[in-house]
Amino acid sequence: MKELFKGLIALAIIIGVAGGIYAYDIWKESQPLSLQKGDFAEIYYIGYFENGTVFDSSFVGENVSYTTPFDEKNHTLVKLKIYMGKDIPKKYPEGWSYSDIGTIKRVKVPEITGLYKALLGMKEGEEKIIKLNASEAFGKKVVEGIKFNTSAIFGFKAEFEIVKIDSENESLTLKYVPKIGQNFTMPQYWYSEPITQPYWLWKNATEVISFNETNVTLKVTPNKLHNITVFPWWENASSVGYNDTKIWITTTPPLGNFTIYWGNYEIPGKVLNVTEDKITVWLKYGENETTQEINRTEYFDRIITLPRIFENFPQLYVGDNLKQLGYSFHELAGKNVTFRVKLLKIYRIED
Image 1 (cartoon, rainbow, N blue to C red):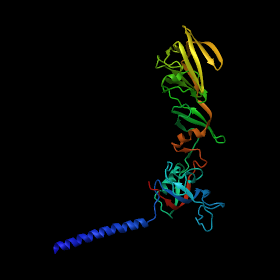
Image 2 (image 1 turned 180 degrees about the vertical axis):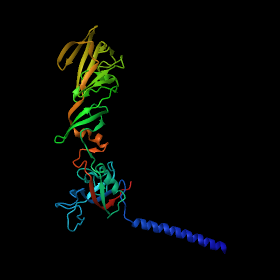
Image 3 (image 1 turned 90 degrees about the vertical axis):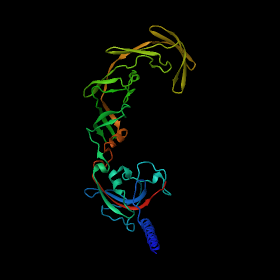
Image 4 (image 1 turned 45 degrees about the vertical axis):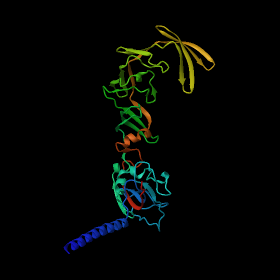
């Protein structure tokens, strides 16, 4: 009898636990969704400054105050469709596409970091007031004197200072910030100025030796002297020498045929003779043929002075670099703002 009684108690406990789990599942399913990373949603919003001035909202065709209720019966409102992710979605709610995802003043919600964080966890039907400082909203305003790193000028990462902002033309004047002893590979273009000598043949061989307010002086120390390819059609045919002031490259091509590839054109050629000083080549341009003599050895300066100041540089090219530091060229950058948001509906896409 005792064993039967114990069995009935155990069965009752199992039934009770199972019933509790089932009841919890029913309760959980009845609760409104809370917004999570990767969800899609529709919201109403009003964005306003600290003085109460509204700068953007879901209301259409009317001036509203920051306290105006989201009342669809008395106002025309447009739902803002948002995606709670910084990547491009792989799937969308039925009837949605990437172009449906809206912006606030041309900025997607995840890029307004404070708003994005505050929306996470909100439930359908919930309304919230979200106060944001500038760095959490549209970013800190870009001002003169900011220093940042970018590879947009030289092709390698270097430090620059903003010395002038031209908002009308959306451009900047930048100053290169060199460091004595800094080494890098010389680019083929110093921003828009072509480097006519082949300093880029030597990796990390260009050193900053001095600078003033407007210029920087560089010294190149070749770190490879043999089997140099100056001309692609004469591979490994050159050797290098240098002294305190000069670098020289001597080319010894093999006798015989070669081809110069220039864009979509092929120029056939032939090395006819090589002397101590000259290379004699035959070239054919279409129907024209010519014989030319070129110097075997070319000399150029080991030390070169280049500008530090770069004008009329497009803001767009360094926007991402500055964004990493919290800065923005946006019209509302530097402004503390508040959002009043109502979460209307959540769309959760299962993988």
